[in-house]
Image 1 (tube, rainbow, N blue to C red):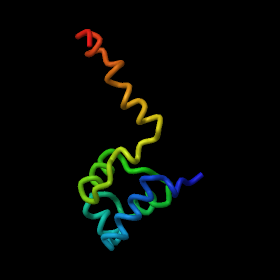
Image 2 (cartoon, one colour; image 1 turned 180 degrees about the horizontal axis):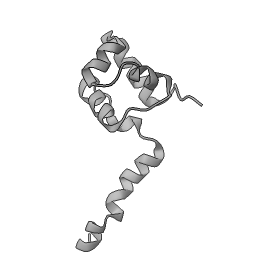
Image 3 (cartoon, rainbow, N blue to C red; image 1 turned 90 degrees about the horizontal axis):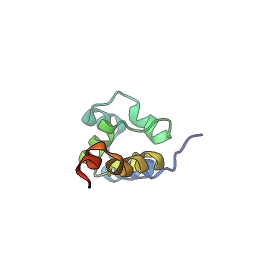
Image 4 (tube, rainbow, N blue to C red; image 1 turned 30 degrees about the vertical axis):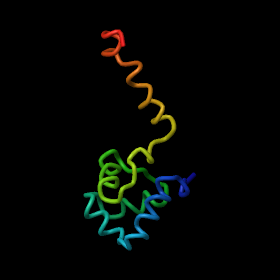
Length: 90
């Protein structure tokens, strides 16, 4: 099932419309292959971490908007479960 109404897709659509930026221009500026942004907009793929960070830098779209709830949960829990924190007693 395609998720064309995800927050990331909505934010990307709005940013492109506001800037009147063609997809090919965005792809060139963030360094992804031709057609990649179309896949993101259709919900067939999500940006890689690199792509998400480039969208954040160029368009101001928070990179974390592309995370699934499961990925966000792991990111939040990672420091708690970290062996480095256990060793320091934090």
